Length: 312
Image 1 (tube, rainbow, N blue to C red):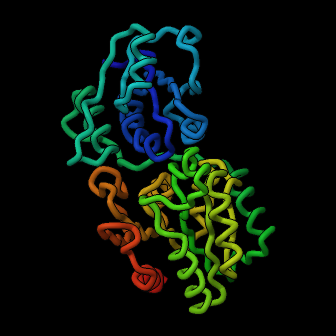
Image 2 (cartoon, rainbow, N blue to C red):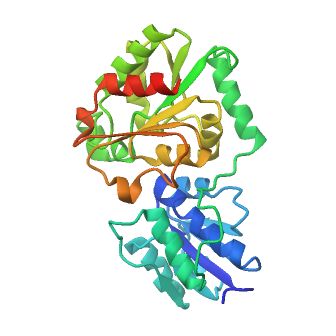
């Protein structure tokens, strides 16, 4: 059906949402090796997720539709108004994924959609998220560790996500709020860092994140002795590289959690009000501890600490 075709897709703006598209894109390429796949990325970070991906021919970041080449077909893999805007402007045959199904994981829904387009009875690939770091990405991570005086042979490196996409929105900056119902409270992270240091002084808590989380990182560094701050110092492939140095990663439902899933690092996933079914760890991880409560505030420091100790 798609052999020798040039296909265009639109990937969403957020890191995690884009990663969730990668298994379905891979299924198309593996089933139809001669297909050429171009991507319209709705953000720089979305394009960064797809860097070096061998399934993809070209990536355009929010281009003017008139500047794009001609295509045989378009696939709306992540239903949204911005994607529809681009695909309508191209005026080519279009296949569109259905509305969000709350009972199916977002990545799985995309795979099932692609499977149907390809007339496949079963999925023929491993449904892993796909990221492609370079040797330079690993070297960059090791340079930052050296700058922090980390001994990669002796120190115990644990990752912890402390922010989320929504903190970057202007209203949070204006009101100087450094909290969000999707993330674990900073006070809890501070207490966890202090207790981990008391448990074993060689434990270092590594905190990655975006520019919008710098204030959170600075507050944490002032109050805990064992912080290795990677905030705003990594691309998405470098985040993947970073995960390979960690004993485990602690995260709520954010893009960083999905990067951790791609790397197969042992994961402690913290969930409050967001949908575990729709956006939880994917695919099923071999080494996952899941803590879910009615709210993120309800997840206690001691139960996270115990989950860390169990994994160590």
